[in-house]
Length: 338
Image 1 (cartoon, rainbow, N blue to C red):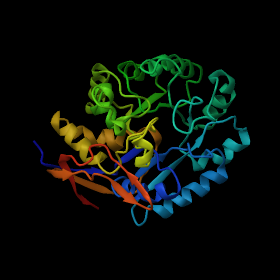
Image 2: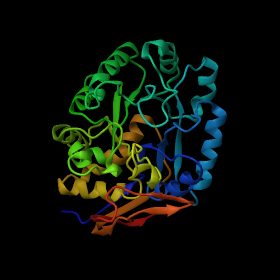
Image 3: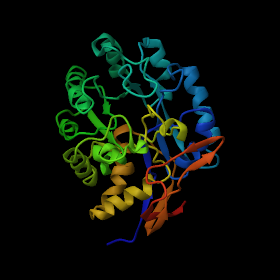
Image 4: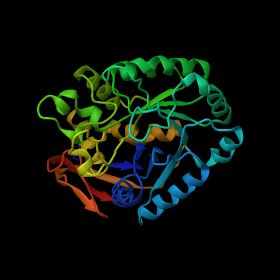
């Protein structure tokens, strides 16, 4: 049983950095341990044109400090023209589709998938990946399962369009991965560990509340098994989503789990617990590099067996954010970053 592992160019393929003071606080916490991350565009206003995207990228690069880190930028899905897509193609890793009102800052999202199929066709022809928050507005535990019909429709109608099912949470979604060549997926740290019982089975834990919501034990097991085996079409995407403490510990708390500072160490512990540490490199980087064709900055992150106490809070720039596992001691830690 290995006591340490050196990971090459860890990647987070689904990340929220927010903007302003919050971005200043959380960006270095990802840039320190990851070589790159796919940046979500659901700001207010959304990142839905090239000017906003370029300006946002510059703010991220300024906030990352001296860390070797590439922000892979995305546009917020809307009814783009062919010229807009052509101009943006080389500056984005994909376009993120949100069903209207499905999650944080998604009110400007898509109301009817079939009304924007002409945009999917242009994206397919230009080789621009589509990233999807796949939920309907049905009963909360069924929303992802119900959306699988839309994934199947898109995968069949646009066979050359690369479609990422973002932050999948169900056994049904795992099974769909193998149905279509052009489907792939990301999965978060929290959905590999928790179920709905951890969120609301006792006293409500607002810092584990996210969308899509955590599901049943059998769903967690299917996700975990796919990750542990480094399913070739599955990538790590933290969906790390910081909110101020005041927005989490309140009535109507915001959806999002903040995992950026502990994700690598916690994944090492998880894979070690299941004797699958050798598969972590593929899940945390190699699959994403192959599926997206990215070449991240060279960075080696060594994790080793040893106590690591997660901070009870991350504070700075006038912000306070509570992480997952706040104040708890993990069994693996980061020992070196080169």
